Length: 219
Length: 255
Image 1 (cartoon, each protein chain N blue to C red):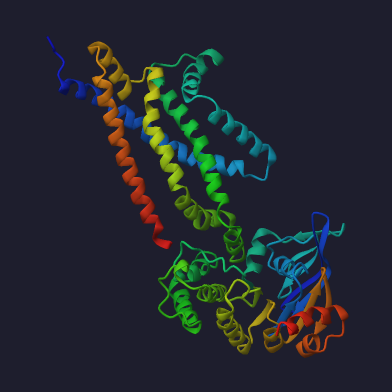
Image 2 (tube, rainbow over the protein chains, first blue to last red; image 1 turned 180 degrees about the vertical axis):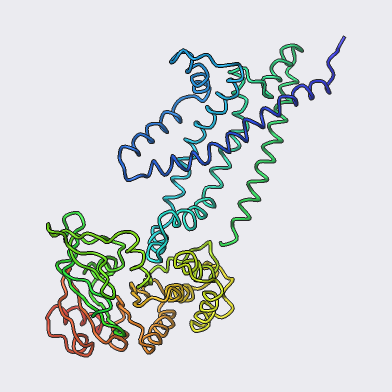
């Protein structure tokens, strides 16, 4: 007697998709500006600031994201004895993802900024632009165009990495897929989840491609 | 009062002294050519004058406004950021490699700084930009992006961009060195036209014939020193110093 239909499987898995989307968009929204700040800190003339940022980036890129999620989630309790409500799961997930991705974006942005010829900054300086204007009007727009391909890679990885939130028992798509799979003793729900991730990434690639084309107006 | 004056500049890069106590002043309407072999310090002098490099010691002023002077210990100190911003509006610089903003159209390259830095009115700035483009033979190119233009056209846009800031003096750092010999002429023609209009200019160049024609005064630099300075017909055609003769003989041999 098969009581679970394909429709049930899909709707169960889809019910976790909202949380997956939340992790995805929140991570992008927080990690990109944070990545820019970290890139600027990394390039700072102050050796203290730049070495601190460099060490942070090194740790965030050199240890597993899953480990970082667990540390962020349990850290407040084990380190400070603070008990946080269950809702903290999603908060810890978003913080963990955001700082981890910020580290990757920081290195991409730094490489992008440093690839802009120094003559651009010099021309801006002679024309009287302030440092802030030079960055926002001259360097940043050229940097954005150059970093689209590596950023696309990261965004695609992020779509798949959202599944790591299952380790904090966040009810996102992969957590549901695993539960349904276990209850049905079937791999089929995992394939369904795989299709969701794949289609999501097709969409991401399509959008990033469009963006890249739009920014190629001055080639 | 000189329009531009730099006095007793010293500049060292990693223990290598590239400028030894150089002083140059330029009067309004004067065209000064700076010649000399590579590594002679002429570009560094220009970069110190335009504050792309900071002097180790020395004085710098535009229209009598001091941008930098020596403190008691003999090290150069610079004016406040606000003062420097105002002083920067007195001069423009045309680079060897143009350094146009690739993501801005020709028109925006010309107009953005006057509007956003100098706070001038858009309509007036755009009108002046169009007139400048016409003068540079770039009519109809206002919506083009730098990459779509030839090197010579890009350099003319760069000159127009500098001029649209209404500078009192324009510096050129080897403006034709990145160009095909064929395109060199169009840039020299533009600079000559500016000289005819009494634009004050300092031009670092390897074009000896051009320097002789267009400059009111020529400075020959070598090894971080001014070796010889004077009227172009004296310095280029009848140099007094042995070093100048040596340098110039290579140019005459090559035609």
